Image (cartoon, rainbow, N blue to C red; front, side, top):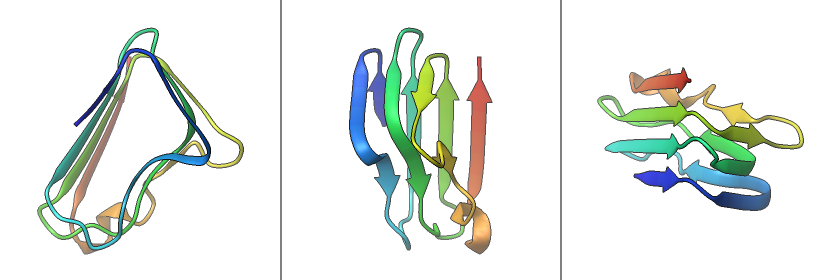
Length: 82
């Protein structure tokens, strides 16, 4: 779990789970939290999940959120913006 109320900053990818990962990843970007860099995943195993709860700001050059391949093997992805 990533719980952010401050600043996470990277040139390029700020948060990433590797391909062929299993389990769950929850990212809570709280109000006032800022992520500078891409939030992404590789392909995840069936039954895995990624949840992004965003009440803050996420900014990046290029792709901001890159979950395109995450669900290829039956994983679930949930993005909630508040």
